[in-house]
Image (cartoon, rainbow, N blue to C red; front, side):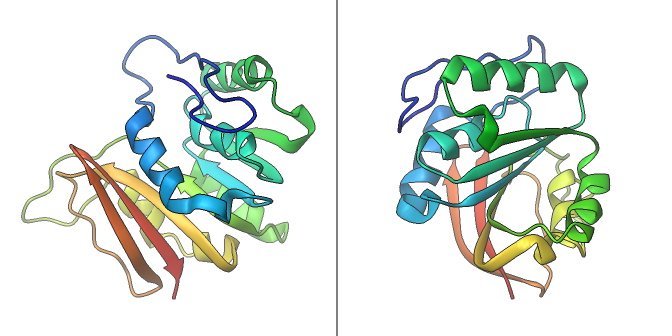
Length: 191
C-alpha cells in the first residue's frame, strides 16, 4: 500500500499484520481522490476508523490544511504515527485520536470542530438481505453528531461492502456512489 499522489507520492505505508485492518485498496483510493480533485486542497479532514491512516495521509500529501484520524486500537495508532513519519508529512498538521469513533464524534461536536472532508471506510458489515444493516457504516449514517461536523459544502465519503445494503437517512443528500468490486464509496452532503 502506498500514497498515490502529492508531496509523499509512492511512499509505502505499513499496515498491521493479520485481518484486523482492511486498508482501502489503492485503486479505490485513487478513484475517490480523482473524483475529489481540488476539494482536497486546504481542506480540514477527519478520518474515522483510521486503520493505517491512508485516507488522511493521502489528503495531507495532496495539500490538505490538517487531518484528524480516529482509531480505536493503540497498536494501529502506532502504525499511523509511523506512517506519518515515513511519508515525511508535516507532523503538526496531523492528529491521531485513540478512541472509539462513536465517543469521538460528540466530543468533536462539543469542541466546535468542523471539517471539509470526512472520510470513513470502516470494517465491513455482514450481508443483510431482508433486514436493516447493523454495520459501522450504517451506524455512521444514523449518527446525529456526524452531520454537525461537516462545514458548509463539506463532503462525507463512506466506504462499505456491496453486500451491506445501507439505508441513507433523510439527513443526508447522496451525491454519488462509486463501485469497485466489493467496495462501494458513497459521497454525501448534509441535507
